[in-house]
Length: 625
Image 1 (cartoon, rainbow, N blue to C red):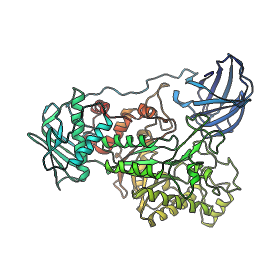
Image 2 (image 1 turned 120 degrees about the horizontal axis):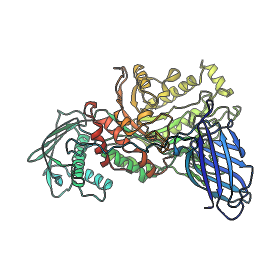
Image 3 (image 1 turned 120 degrees about the vertical axis):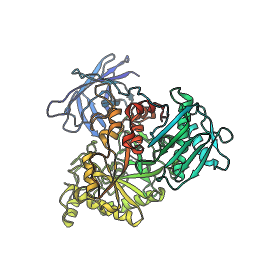
Image 4 (image 1 turned 135 degrees about the vertical axis):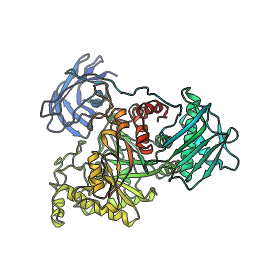
């Protein structure tokens, strides 16, 4: 390439979010006459940003387009400074992700990009604090079990079903291990090895198991999931002992175990950056190895509509695509051609079958009323024609991106889309988002304001709550429960009796929701959002709006401390992988581990049995994507 972008950052004055200093280097032998300079960045700007070196013509989400004020001579540079961002930078990964120019003769030239560099001496710092850890007993098992009483250790045997035991569960776990660790020796055989007797018993909690080691191995289990979890535990222990000499296999003693929480989840955002079925199946396999049981599939957001729709097929063309010249410009790591992708009904059926075999339920998310730019772009009639464009901007930088409660068609469309989702997904809960609607949304929409006046609604929160109660009633009539982010309790909120809320902001918000009677899944951004920055210092990676979340901070987060006794319940925990810059499995692996395993242990292991040094050692055995 003949273009290279260097980028620098200066911290904010008191009233701004800092400045980007961009220099485009022409490494070629001919002058370049640019018609426009485009880039995508997590450091966002808007129409109030002061641009020096060119004229801002478009800022939408993470996409920026500037008309340069000069040519770029051969061997020379062009500079642009953007002062007064609406979202700043705190490390090297929060600057420009992709950049290109279009020339006056119609060519597109992409640039290589250097790291964002601090121009005012910000400390570099480590990228990740993940010490080697320490084990006190040679048990390669994560999440750690509720009770361990092993009296003797030895070499790991190959395990096999005892005569009379159903071989199918053994084969399922053996296949899981083979997919996750294709180069490692198998822990389970169906034809030879040390027999494992299985016995269903009534004295265990739901999904629990008890392993007894001696002359024989006996696996007592409460139910089919307890059997699966017990066999997975055996496979983990045997696998660790055969690949790492720090670990051995129990010869005598007992392990008793059961999950701490009913909901042990992972959310994956595929709207910001699409991941194909192969990746989704791998995610599910890693979850099963960690005995997680709920996959929250974030299929819809501003940047892409990934769930199939027969009623509105444009959602899978216009709504699922972005690029130069399209309704949605490139975003988050896209080049000028953007990206496209959605799942077919066959894709979803294959993923559901895979998840079901692993004991994982899948909850789809169909985002509404905010984060709806892709939906609004693809389905005509969802905008109030008299609402000024740009009268509000979401925190991610999208203008006029919320479905309008004052437009009757809004309800027809969302009911149809929810019915389509219900037909595709058998799980009894559908997540509808309901987060981050800008407080100025609908304030300048005549249709919304007339609707608000007619229904006695005064604020954006109250308008949203009215809309969500309609959605909740629709789902209730179809035998489904509504799930949403914690904002769904604001403005009067949805009814607690048929709802599951996901508390992402603070522990105090979790407590508040429970006190109002909502059942809650804790997914705190400051601890369980796996895209959050992992360490202080410029060389760390990740987003930083929720602060710094090192692996130990994630592990030590005491999710249930300080919560009320009810009337609502804390039903579980959930990790989240948001996809703004996590566009590949390598990018996810670099930041999500070991924190994904830490959330898995929070969902499974009693608080009193947790140990950071032990976890730090064991988490290195966890498979990645």
